[in-house]
Length: 327
Image 1: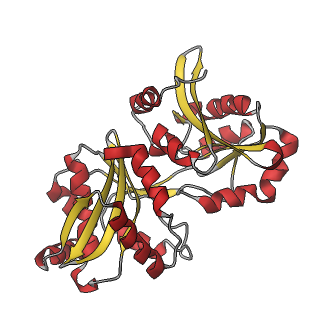
Image 2: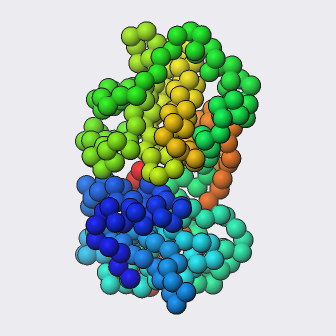
Image 3: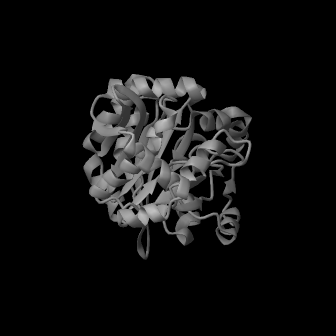
């Protein structure tokens, strides 16, 4: 059934599941509207009652052909996932839809994979959102968090503190973006323009946190974290390359965890680990793993034909364009 129209009402439903996700929020839909995605929201029910929720992002292209994408959805129990995707396929059929794609936070489990295959749902060879990630629980006592880290990570945090690295939370979006541009140039990755981050700020307001590390008067690193209920996602950031000997980015990560702890966060997602040794994230993964936490592997991107004669068009290139877009 269609969900309530209001953004506040939808977000309340998402939080009430106990498994809220940033990418299933109304704020995320607002951000994606700028690139042509339109949100449709559904409460998934059967004769036993409510079984899940899904925010479906739909984008139409040439000839009115559409792609329907449940980013980090549907939100449901693993046993209900095949039926939930089936229900979304039914509503997606109202459009000339190439494919229904979902990448829920569900375990990569052989039993679940078999149930999905029986329902006509296949795993994709590409992914849009990270399939592997690192989760930490900042609600633990700080001494416990430090004890769970690698020895070198603890040493570098303490070294940064001794050497006077300062960290602060800021609302200065231009400052954040200036640092991020330096990081992008240094590490050779593209970044969004300032307008994207303004829209992100407008969508999430005070739940978006910008943190900066500086050494003296020079900014040396930044992080952007978004918080919903008791969960937080570290979406953007990096080290500028300056003041390597002072380890500013280690301290910034630590202070970010402590800040989220103050705000009641119980699950902190470092948003992405490498898919293999050749992945560009391999070096970043080693850095992240120094902070402890739990490595999780989700089932990945799931593809379902909607109007079956159109499904081959999805494989001809649309899926790779979507994967390349990422966040």
